[in-house]
Length: 326
Image 1 (spheres, rainbow, N blue to C red):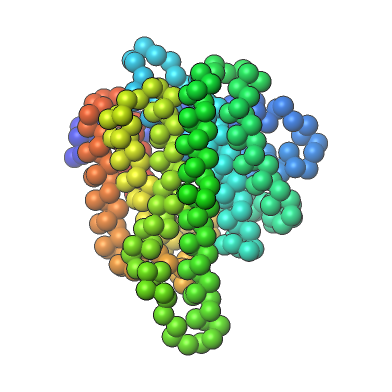
Image 2 (image 1 turned 135 degrees about the vertical axis):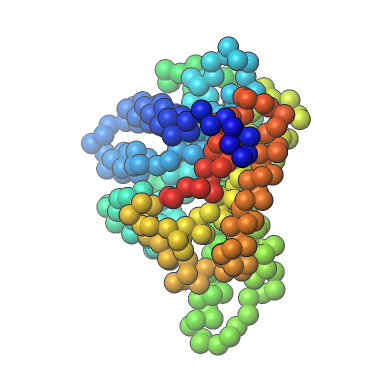
């Protein structure tokens, strides 16, 4: 056992590798329904099958295993929600990288989609991935996977769509854009224009990242729990876990933008500082940011205690979030 009480015999590297292979094969099965000669499909495949961590779909699967009976095989029935979550996440990255947003040239170690194809293709590819994510959830019989009951799928669709939409990720992106706009106006006028009070506050930053990053991470965990028929207390504990790791994940990203290696991360570093983006290190400093992330992970692990050994993958993932190098 390590200092956090987690079984050191469990290999997270092996677990993630195995789950990524399973998820990647399922994504290829979904894409196989299309003609690869179409530019739109080639663009979808280019971004979706890049070297992603697959953290969100893995969380979905691991959460279901927390609730399922030991002899209950759940991977096959949870794979469509897991894939839908990854498709939505990939769409958000494509749009984040656009010139009108973060204007990045590198993603997952490859040129961003708008650099490889075109800006218009990138916009439409993101739209296609988002739309198709909900199509596969509504038409599970078209795919060679064990299906969940329709009422469970409907609940999962509602959970994911709420997290991805105007109450979640999109609103978080809007808050991010507003903060950047104020920073840009300050630079353009060359005056010391202050942020609107709540926009420069830690409260604003927490809200922005809770919505932009945290809600989809929470939806990933909740989707797995819903699929496995979690009761109210189980769902609340898993939601608490997810809320804490979601914020910790964003803080880790902010730190990696300062301390990370672009060759390891597969994307540019230092852009947050260069663009004067609102980040945790900017507001509270690097050391306090690291300490806050550690506190969040401690809270997340505490929320999992009720699940015992079945929560081992989720426990390991929580630690990985603040220890990762990319």
